[in-house]
Length: 237
Length: 248
Image (cartoon, rainbow over all chains, first blue to last red; front, top):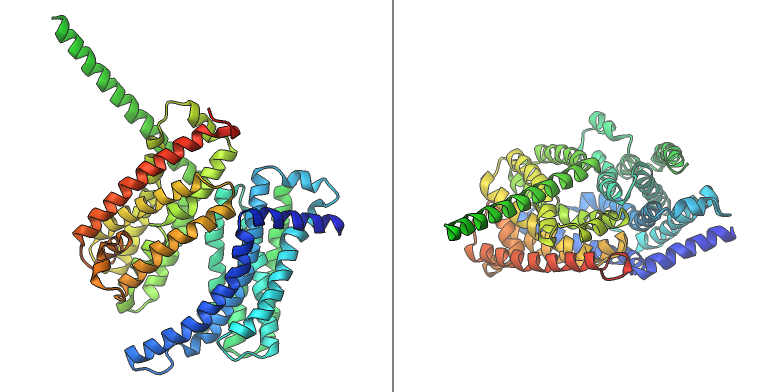
């Protein structure tokens, strides 16, 4: 536990030097403010422009889903970049043979940022959320968003061999967040083609107004995490 | 006779120098493209192009042109800004830049190679997306993509030579993205007054979106590119001199 704590603090010091800690800490607030004020404003402008009522209101839930996805991704993305740097500089293999070990490294670089992201999302979603969400919805959205953030980070660090491939994969893997759009826009039998994305089930949870869809969201995330963790273990062996 | 001989020697030397320069630059360009292929740029943009084409196909006809313009401007045209930090940092960690420092390669050749190799991908993707949207003319769209790509890649090179980590690069490129993307997208949506046509990002967006050509805007874009090119070459030269923490 002591080694994990030191390893996490070491990462914090590393990102603090780049000002990225400040940016990652501030961005959920800035995105939240922009969304909370900007989207209703755009909705009002569209109403004036098109004459239609509530053009964007049916999609407020979708904006909330994307917000709960972006906040954990910001936190986990910072950790992923640090992991890529450590891999390229051959620091990670030295850390694995210390008291920290592979498991401890994973906890300090992925689990702790994930837990912090979960707590931050849990606090900020009721403040900046656009749609009326119950306490259960807020809890489950924060949970699925965090799991998705960890999946994206694992995708980047397990499939890339250096920071350049990591950046390419970051771009690619962020498309996973778009699975939430499917229940809103793609007719049902075809929408299930995206059911391998955890965000698809999060979208289902809101569109169907059924918290039960959190179960497939967790299962799909767990399968992704298991496969990617195995791949990551092979890579660092 | 002897003066004629000297003149012909001089011509032959100039010709050889040009050949050496061209050969070296072409090798640099080919290796940059192989480097990008090796690290999945072409594969990534194949997937992204398919995804973007699917998105464009699913959109109503009226939205296609503007969406394609935003996609082209914010992704393939700006890819140099997104990837340059990782490219330069990887080269640094593999000590490639140290070899460049002691090789006959010039900083401007290095910058040109980076700009042209990334612009080639941007042009291919932009061409496909422009065709898929079915709106506007291809030549202006490709010209706008080329100008935007060169501009963003040069910004990327300048920032990449100053940073020591990926997180730092991402953070430092945020202002460039803000001043590059937001005015251009607002201009495309017709929110900004016509005087802003002279803003380089807006001039590029006009070309990509098939909104017309602002001669002053394009002139200012070219001036900005020249200025950025000079700064980028100086930054690269300085970075090469500081390899290993000491000045060579």
